[in-house]
Length: 272
Length: 284
Image: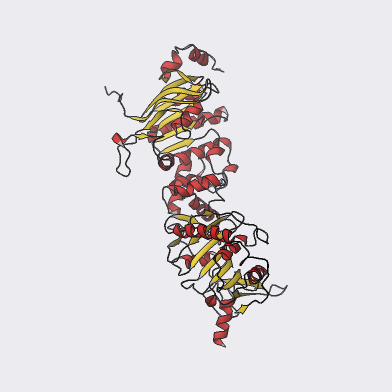
């Protein structure tokens, strides 16, 4: 029997990262390890520090203490990435960090309006990252845009429409297409299904799951919705008051929660 | 060429005090050293509203010498309001000689055009700039645009051009067409028609840009590479006209449409009045 590879290389690692806005607010010495091709879910109630953690991991906010280490795929010789292909996210310069965010990483905001340029058409939104990478052929950019619109189940004939004319669910799809168009190594998602009604949410999740599998994405997913976490993530971290109270395989945590808070969280899920 | 007799007393030469002029010249030196980079400067109040060329005037005042000959144009013409009043201003406060002939001028202050006659070595062209930041329409935050310049994050400039093609089928930006200076800084060449963009490339004169409201100045030094941004399959093109200038017959100049009556009568004439006139005189 063929067994899955259990010792996959680490892609992103956080060592004791802390960022506190006040006692119990923010996150406190957290260790995270994300393997290549893995979806890691971070769950917890509002104010538990999960979004703060995401900002720390994605290079948007400097931690008070601790390190975030990124290990890109085998150094392709285009950049000196330091010893053993390790990048200490907050030790490298801002230029490199922003280039990383732009080229190798992707970020899906909860509110698609934060991630989209509302003043320009859907096609320009999808093409932006390509143009930032130096793509200068209009027809090719447009063709890629149309391809991605159909991948995220949007009507590719609407490529010239402004994002404002799209519904909330469609805007979220557009944001996902815009992020994934450059095939990022690592994607951060902050409540990607927040604010959508359940049927739209279900289709979006279905699509996300397919894309994650097809592209072999590594994802860090922040959500307060345990159902979303169960559907998408391989591993889970449960946060409360800035600390990780439990971590492990998703099914294990949701089916057999050990910590009292996790038990409360799991038992609070409504089932119609 | 005419030298004004009625120089106003009580003002320093060219209106600004010497310390201010030194400050602006220091900024200009930095701007020349880093082509296309926007240098902040302490803009002064000028006796004119913002938007009328206060940035260009401050630069002109700082670089003007007592023996220099000044030419001022507005949309290519020497006789429009803006040009006439700025020329009169420098005649009064500096007493310098003025001219309308491009070739005779040492300093040319311009609004919205580059003269048709190529600049020669040693000539200074001073532009009046309303909005110096080419990224402004896409990124409203000044902090962010500065960072984008520092890190050469210019992908968004092409987003704007992409949007043009998506909406109009071609790049519809016709003025203030963004350029890349010396392969580094994306720069707004002020609202000149894109017809004039090729004149920025490898020009022999020094081009200075001053924005009074935004208090920024920048420069394109002589013999500097200036490329207009475009797509591989939608290359940069300049405007073209079907008919030549109706006064001088030129086919290679930027033409203005002039309405001649209220029954739809119109004619196309050179916007550079000095160039047009000199061609007419040559023929005569």
